[in-house]
Image 1 (cartoon, helix red, strand yellow):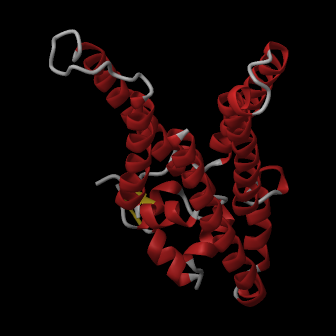
Image 2 (tube, helix red, strand yellow):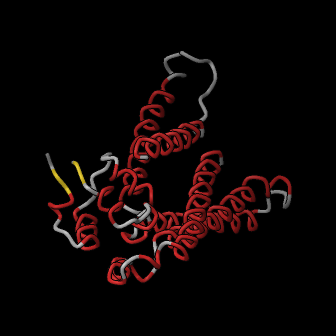
Length: 63
Length: 183
């Protein structure tokens, strides 16, 4: 699944560590999500959507 | 003992990594975090479980686990070497040390459970994959290892504790490989 984590993070000038702390996960998880190697759970996707003030479908793309 | 040492080493690595991350984060807080919009920071606080961040929670759980694993190892060493070297097979003392070892083992298991529950979803997945691989390899290896003397492939009697070596090494290698895959 593709996602816009990296772009959204860069737009806000956050580091991976900032985002990891905000989502209460490890930096390894953020790296894996950004590289598309790991698809987060629904709960983490909702957390990310709330954090970025976006809808889940605006962050993740299943195509 | 080797398995426990490998697992302990793995946990120490985890602790060092998270300690480093938390130091890195505390530096970031003084430099970058103040530039974040206030509303985002509030959102961040809402996402934290029990007002404790991931790094400090994992570091605490890892310390807790290392402590109980260390005590369990010590009590196991006492059970193993005490009767011959310290109290000349005195039954009451031996039973006391065995009971102590079981209690320490229970505390270590509980600390491990707490440690796993404190990890994030990706790390829990890596641990699950490592456990599955380790269990599967141990089962296959163990079943075969029990037969090799019976079918006269080897002349010596296989030592069941060798399976623990296989289990520990498989677990450790899988953790390393899967962590590398996801990073």
